[in-house]
Length: 323
Image 1 (cartoon, rainbow, N blue to C red):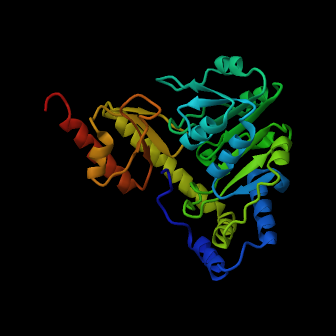
Image 2 (image 1 turned 90 degrees about the vertical axis):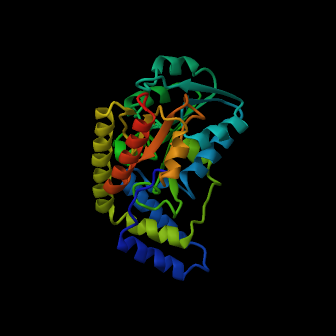
Image 3 (image 1 turned 120 degrees about the vertical axis):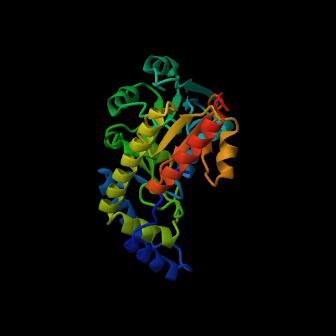
């Protein structure tokens, strides 16, 4: 599920326990305002741009349901599946632009040709499940100048890629960037996401108000005071990711470079997901959006990555023609 393998730091857990002691109360609105202020500073935008959510997927779903019925919705294939499912339910019409093998590069000319009339463009950057950074802020800014286009960029893995469109929301009313604290802050169990919204999104989503659980609110506030720990963990994951990718490529296994905390692999092992599960290893099956054999592998601790590599290599050799 692309979580970080380490629990939150002690300071974050201690802060969460304060919220647990007040579990019979709704969140204090002044604390929610403080959280928006901290997230605004972290994202280098104004606190008035922040929309809080109980998970970024919930905010994405709300925005898609709100804007897609009277617009052509454009997404990528593959992409973050819950967002795609939301668009299928409500979009007036829908177009999915394929990210082709082997480099999964987004063809901007094809994308621009599809933008005609009222449109909603929703894309994850880096892309999930390929891990590729598919568009640059400069390219997004060019698109934002098109008439009657609204753009949502999901940056769930921004801290790993370092590529963000956050600075554009102050200048473009038709842009919203969504993010999460689930991944890099080791807070998947807290379930909190947030949006950085341009004026059009702020206006239409003005009634989208979330009372976060106090445990979540206190934990995130403490996590934002311990950003250095998060950044250290991000670097460890990136080093492990690159090391594991190099080992796969050295063994001739089809794996793809990534800007996120996971690796996409094309496996020739029959029933690879089930075979790994028998060995206590869980990976994501991507065959619902891609050709058979594609799996997404989360980067964990070095010993966990080592176990996965050894088990996968053994399975691969057991399935080779010589056997």
